[in-house]
Length: 458
Image 1: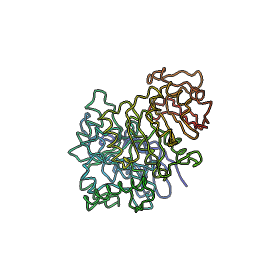
Image 2: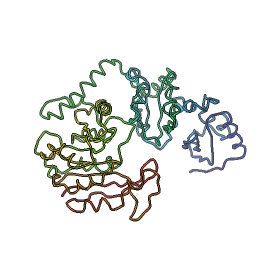
Image 3: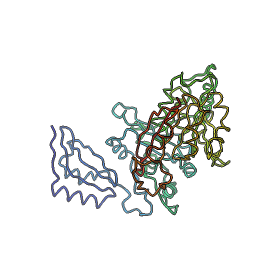
Image 4: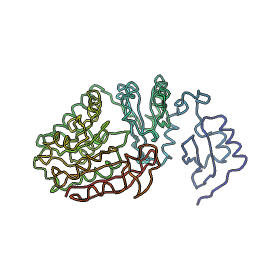
């Protein structure tokens, strides 16, 4: 049986005093008393989570006065160093994760590769916390600026693990103080790389130790090689139990249309529709205007995990020597270099694309082509009308679109002239195609309306 209590004036006064002595803003509106615990509301700046204490902590004003709700040791730090205000002890951070509603906890490890390989955080193996998964990705502070496209979206909260000596550098980059337009990432908590931190992690069963670092690096490289050989040469015997697990951990997210619509269609594709006459040769997927190559990486990894390997082509007119190296290195780090190809190509005209990819089209190897936030009406119209695209090929697009016929576009970016009308794609693909998905969705950062559209050549 539960009883809900209002907060007395005395309790509120003690909360206010606790706020004055802590960086953490405490806000209590009601307390729920169960047979075993008190549950009350804790507000830590922008984070609001329920927090539980045993009944042994009664009365409430004693809890407020003495516990002080994970008091910060960084009161009074300079306001121009935002990340210092987010420093938190590991045990306190873990307490927050246990009462949060998120099952995946993203962590950016900014320590060096050597320190990460020596010891790293891992998810707890206890049954009590089996529903909590730590998503830990190592990107050293020395390269994080070059690999910013591998970070979470700006609106997604995450924690960082960093050495104290690198905290100022991390703050400068992640908080944006080194840029004219800051546009900071949402770093919710900062975990400092200290011996005390690792002792607590070890006590909680959340530390993974790699004793032989050189052997680990060699084994990882060998596993990637074996994976490539096993896919490209299916008849060759390999110890698949040693192959790297896919998909690999990531802080970034693919486009929702790719993740929730196109990928399932590819993974469940009917062999009759696939028409794969090449036996062992993987089928092709084209990402038109692929940019940083995250959607390419997502599809290559997820299709490997589903045992439906495809070769994913990233096609973009911006792929000069520097950009090509960036995307190729990205895919290499993720173990999919043998399953991806980058191509520099002007996508203004279908004939240019058709000529460059002629071999795949002639051999019926193309499974799908798609665009994400890229709209060339002449190109898409030509794709819809092309006789080179055979039955079973999928076409997908995720782009800004008005929510209904005649609706206005109420956003400054992108400009309305680049925004699709509600039924524009439906009208283009009415003949010769089966429309499998044609829905409006909202983007996750600004609430703009997008169309998620997938059609299949009939």
